Image (cartoon, rainbow, N blue to C red; front, side, top):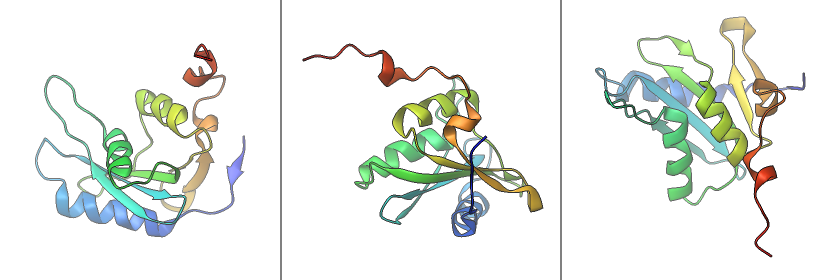
Length: 136
C-alpha cells in the first residue's frame, strides 16, 4: 500500500468548518474539501434526497470544475455533528478514481489520520478510461 507522507490538516479544517456551519438537518450531512493542483481549496456538501442524491465528494467534483479546477490533488470528507473524517463510499471511490487516478484521500481518525492514494482504497479496480474505445 502506497502511503503519502503528509496529512493536509488545513483541508480537514476547511471540511470541518463547512460541516459545522453549513450541514443542517437531513439534507446536508457531509462536507468535503479538495485541494486543486494549484493549491485552491474547494468545499461542498452532499444533497441528500429520499430518491438518492450526490455525496459531498461528487458535488465537490462538479463544484471544482465550475471554478476551473479540473485537477484535484487531495480530498477529505467530514461528517456533521462532529463525526470527523469519513471515508468515501464505494461509488465515490470509483468516480474519484476515474476522474483523478492519482488523487490522495485523507482517511482515519485522531492520531490514525493518514493520506492514501485513491488506488489504495480501490485495489484491483476497474478503471473506466482503460475500457473506452479510441475514437481515432
